[in-house]
Amino acid sequence: MKNFRGKVAVITGAGSGLGREFADRAAELGMKLVLADVQADALERATDELLGQGAEVLAMVCDVSKGAHVQELADAAIARFHGIHLVFNNAGVGSGGLIWENTEADWEWVLGVNLWGVIHGVRVFMHAMLECAKRDPDYEGHIVNTASMAGLLNAPAMGVYNVSKHAVVSLSETLYHDLQLVGAPIGASVLCPYFVPTGIHKSHRNRPEELTPDTRPTASQMAAQALTVKAVESGKVSATDVSRITFDAIREGQFYIYSHPQALGGVQERMEAIVGGKNPPDPYAATPQVREMLRSRM
Image (cartoon, rainbow, N blue to C red; front, side):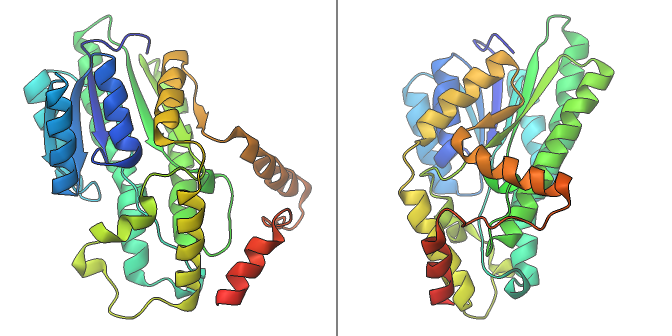
């Protein structure tokens, strides 16, 4: 996708973090914006700011874990702007702890947003984008699914999150191949950021009451949360940086998008272990103090 001006961008999780930065960059490029978030006040603030900058904006409160909500978002986008060109399936939440200590509610919440949100986004928006392509011989589109370096690595005490993001990487790679198979004028990318100050460590503030456990967090869950807070808040690559990197990648038709390419050494080590039939390598071999900190808090 080379041209952005006048095109329509749909962004989930648009009220804060990466989604908010994607919206800013899309507006700078002259795109019309369809913004979705489950947090109404954050969405309202983002909308007011972007309208004040002269952007055309449609905003909807949307729980991406619910297919009907995503369908309503797509229908509203088509009704308002008569097309969809760029989709960011970006909404995400985080949760940690020893994998056997995660409750059914933990799994339902994280997979509902991180995985089912992307499933619904691909299922619903791809149909809409393909219809747009049928009507316009010059149509070009792109879809970006936000995964994580946790979709390529498996750090301990992050099992639910790891599972959700590995599934997003797999879904995205398959989407890329399927689009190539049918010759669709639509590109696909998977974004795999590492630790970026986005506020994802505060995502429990938006957790539905019916999916909130009635028990206190375990020691491992509190330890994982503390580690995540420290890592996210100390991140040196900003959400603005990631937005710039992502739009450059869209323009170049790049599938894998990384915020921290230096972290790929761990991915290579993991792949070599898989190919060589070896046991999974120690993710904290170079930073044993992190492992000891986790152990000391459990």
